[in-house]
Image 1 (cartoon, rainbow, N blue to C red):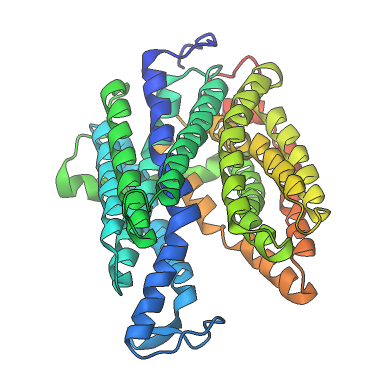
Image 2 (image 1 turned 135 degrees about the vertical axis):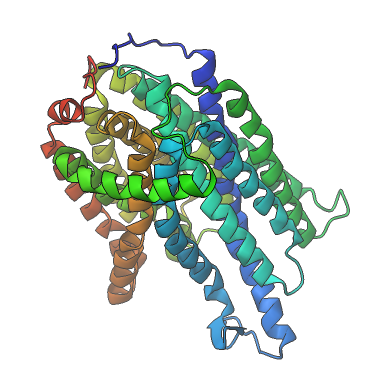
Amino acid sequence: MARVRPARSRLNAEQRAWCSYDWANSVFQTSVLTVFLSLYLTSVAEADARASGQPCPSALRDCAVSVAGLDLQAGSIFGFVLAASTAVQLLVLPITGAIADRARNKRALLGGFAFVGAVATAGLGLMTGTAWELGAALFAVANLCYYGSIVVYYAFLPEIAGPDERDHLSARGWAFGYLGGGFCLALNIALLQLREVFGLSETDAIRICFVVCGLWWAGFTLVPLRGLREHRAPLGDERGAALLVAGFQQLRATLGRARSYPLTLAFLAGFLIFIDGINTVAETAGLYGSEELGLPIEVLTITILIVQFVAFGGGLAHGWLAARIGAKRTIMVSLVVWVQVISAAYFVQPGQRGQFYALAFGIGLVLGGTAAMSRALFSQLVPRGEEAEYFAVYTVGERGTSWLGPLVFSLVAQQTGSFRPAILSLVAFLVIGFVVVALVPVRRAVEAAGNPVPRVL
């Protein structure tokens, strides 16, 4: 059994290097996914529809593009691309985790995913005119590589931090991820606002933003690649095709053994339930602000920045709290705050910017910290040497269940004709997840996984 290292308030050089990957990759989620890609891809698809003679009225019902002989609405293209990309991830990420546990050099695997993803992200700048298919393909590659790199990245956490250090380290990484994502988004928004100074059209400015995001992701990935080390011998010594075959065998064996850790699976189930609700809130906040509250796009953009920068402090606060009451209790406190924030969202009045900014502040306080504590606690519950595989299941599970929250939100909105009860319906995910996590005896779960028990749990 590994020796328990005392907790440190300061990070060592390797831990700081690890945190820097959160800083590097967050631009993909923040600038690419949240802000720029969906609207830009849709506009390029609309241009393709117009070029083929399709009318494109404001409702977009007749604005369609042809895909494999099917006519799809231009406005739905991004959703279909996102769904297809997620389906590919469900197939690829589990074997990625198995290979990472057997590979000789996890750093090379991390770098490979990151650099390919960054190149694909920068390549989105080539999407212009009617070439939405190019953008869709590049996004699918970038999205797969983003989550592939996340699986490998998470697997380093139990290698570089002792049981009493992981809460603090995970919170610090998540906090700096939001800070990095916020800085890059602010840079991109500034470029967009000042585009006329540089003689750029709006389209050109957005394309440059994609290039900036790719360069940011690739450039800052160099820091963890230089700072991280290989701490454990791989589970095997295969190379090339033999490594792929061994990875599939390893995955099959791990999935078979996972039933021996029912408490780990119970925590994972609780996490998947409440994180689906949290992600749905984050994904639909802009829609709620725009359609239900009638807020303009500049308010929604400012709101995103508020969430990013407040989440930095919120992540650090979660780490501070976990050091005193443990990760499990911190998650439960965070979920209680989430319920209060969502309940408050129901009462925000139309056109009230201040109320919406206050709501964004509340979301920022708990958005990153809840996930950071879950990441840290899960690392305590997985068998030593199989971290990448279990984090692959963790990531795949999150992606694979990410449809349920939006489905509930949409069904409630459709039945009631309002987004207010729809946003309130997401409280159910948080309450159910809270109950499941509360019932998991995490100390016994850590011991069952064969890991040393943290002093504060």
